Structures are given as C-alpha cells and as structure tokens.
Amino acid sequence: MSRSTWSGNPPSNDDEARLRLGQAALRCVVNTGLHKTTMSDIAREAGIARPTLYKHFKTKNDAIIFAIDAAGLEFAQAVKEFALKFDSAEERITEIIVFVFKELPRQEHLSLALDPDLSQALGERAFVEEATLAFSRIAIGPVIELRPDLQKDGEEMAEVMSRFAISLIMFPGRFKNSEEELRTFVKRRLIPALL
Image (cartoon, rainbow, N blue to C red; front, side, top):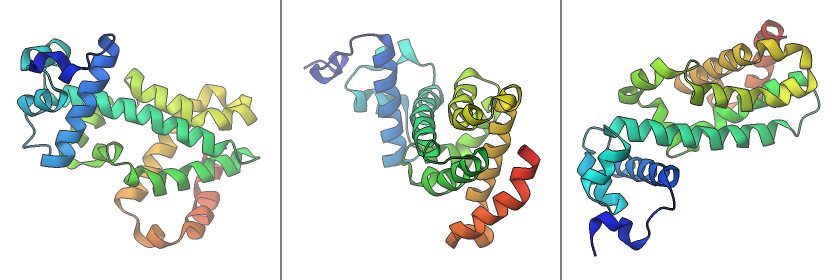
C-alpha cells in the first residue's frame, strides 16, 4: 500500500486532510516531543508521503498550530456548554475561569499550547488571529447572552479571562487545591473589573 494513500482511507476534502494531518502532528509531539518530531514523522503517522504533507503545511509548527486551533474551538464549545448551566453573568464568568483552570491542563493536545517551545508562536497569534478570536467569541457567548450590553466589550473580556485563567494554570499558588478559594478570588477581584 502506498503511503500517499492515507493508509487506505483518503480524506474527502482539503479541510479533512488538514485536520487529520494536524492530529497526526499532535500525536507525534505527544509521543516523541516537539523538538524530535519531524515532517517525516508526521507524514508517516498520517500514512502519506512527505510531498503530500507539504501541500498542506510548510512546517511542523504550522500543522501543530492548526491542530491546536481546532482543539481550541472544541474546548471553547465545552466551555460554552458548561457556562450555560449557570444563571447569572457573574456566575458564568466565575465558572468559566474555574472550568478552564481545571480542564485545560487535562486536554492532552490543547495543553501543548502551554509548552514553552510553542508559547512564543502561539502567543504572537493570541487575540489577534481569527482562530483565537473565534475561541474568545464562543467562550464569552454565554455571558453576552445574559448581558447584551457587554457585546462591544466581549472579545476584550474574553481576553482578560483567558489571560487570567492561563496565569492561574501556569502559577496556581494557593489555588491548586481549592476551587472554592479560586471562586471567591474571582468574584472579589475579577468580576468587578469585568462588569
């Protein structure tokens, strides 16, 4: 069987091909590490020849970032669904931050966004490129639903919340074992700033 045949299961279109290649790239990074992963590894993992991979991505980081963006959109949907369980904008903001703090590190592929080697490339795109803005719009949606007056500030609010949650993940301090303390802190310090 030819490696260029996608292991006998070719994608139906270019979007599916890019998604599968990105997922293959993430599997390689998880298995062998970012620095050791090569374009050849990704092609092998996807069951294709390297020239096919290069038709879709110029570098391994392009494939990895594409896949992290896709994983980020899935995670944003999970954040949104979780937030809709709460009845006030304040509760939704608080619970979004607690949810992201707890769940983001558990997302095998999405947690790669916290990798210091990828953080510079990802950080340059954060809150300016469409994929990251889409995440922000989805995640803040449940808050805006209850407070339409905040629509014009929605993306900025999502950015503040994201930066806050990521800093807590990177430097949990006293909150690593206490969700209740985190909730109290968010309600006392962050909610007044956002609302």
